[in-house]
Amino acid sequence: MEGLSASEQREFASRMERKQLKEFMTMYSKLVQRCFDDCVNDFTTKSLVNREEGCVMRCVDKYLKSSARLNERFQEQNAAMMQSGQMPGR
Image (cartoon, rainbow, N blue to C red; front, side, top):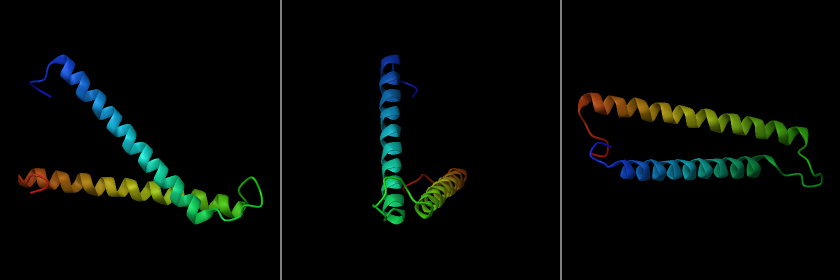
């Protein structure tokens, strides 16, 4: 961000915040849709039955753990590429 004026830095930060929020909302939406589709199938009651609730909890846990692991691996790969002098995408 060197070489940017203060207003350009603020604009850049604002755009990054919007992008991060959009990415978070997309991830959240996918999580909700996936776990709902996989776990909820009894529409005779207005609340989740125990089986569905347990399924949703396991689904969310697994999704969050896999996302965290994927992020860790991405960071490891990025760090290794930076150490070796390679640029991502080349």
